[in-house]
Amino acid sequence: MEITSTIKYIGVYDDDIDLFEGQYVVPEGISYNSYVIFDEKVAIVDTADARRGEAWWSNLMQVLDGRTPDYLVVQHMEPDHSSLVAEVCERFPSLKVVTSAVALRMLSQFFDGVDFQQRVLTVKEGDTLSLGGRELTFVAAPMVHWPEVIVTYDSKEKVLFSADAFGKFGPTVDDDSWDEEARRYYINICGKYGAQVQALLKKAAALDIEIICPLHGPVLKENLQHYIALYDTWSSYRPETEGVLVAYASIYGGTAAAALMLAEELRERGVEVVTADLARCDAAKALSDAFRMSKLVLCASSYDAGVFPPMYHFLYHLKIKNFQKRTVALMENGSWAPTAARAMRAMLDEMKDIEIIEPVVTIRSRMKEADVAAMEAIADRLAEK
Image (tube, helix red, strand yellow):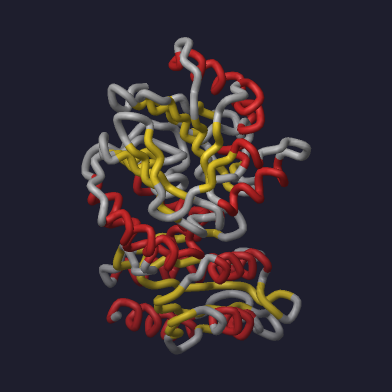
């Protein structure tokens, strides 16, 4: 793939991986993006996961067409982008590795016995590297989403090599799924680090960018403001959609029935609603929907004097991804001692700017006519907000 006449894509597509980062379902696989910049000198920008090492090497050697690379820019040390660094150094003895000081310390952790000290150029915020007819400028992007991350700007071609920022699950096709899969990717991979992403966006705003080359997903060449605006929304923890996620964790179906009834009550009031069965759904998608919507309803069975584990795990992941600035309603179910609402409230109290609206709905085993008024009151409150 040609990015420009002097920048070539040499990434590879992994279509049979079962879980990305050992936990995220990727039904359409994932790409490991990598690039080569040709000038008087040649620079490779990141490598790939060793799972697709043979294909990556084939792509690299084909575009090099006999030239020897001078530099390997390592923007991010996560193994899906850096697994082949030692092989590149072995094959090209004169090549210099360009990376951050933090990444230099990590290299020996991943590649035991390889001496990188004599062949690494460490760079920091604002440093430049001349390739002859162009300069690459390096921008520090710590915790987007590891501490060693740098991104790289080519002012001649107006290209930002954005590391994991602006990536998405799935192939390199720029299709209608970008927002959905990029959101699921961002919230689960970078969601905790909104302040750091905001800092990077401010730095990027000072650059004249026409192309964004991320390490996953499609190269972005058009309508860049759409993607940047979404990143600003996500990293500011602002809701993207006015509506409600009804997330439920049910043991024998009683809690599920009540949750789905509440969802219908909300729809009848003109509220946009999505639902998530936390025991069965893609947890990463449920998390992404919680960040997308402006309000959240948590419906859970009581369990072992606490809350049913699928809801506990959902709330745990909301907390570690820095969930905040939302309105939340609670519904609990308990046959002899309802405890779910207390447990959910305790976890929500550890999150920022969460408003819990009243009343909390408590049902006993199965929803009854007497419970309807409380559910309608919750639906009215959510619709008003």
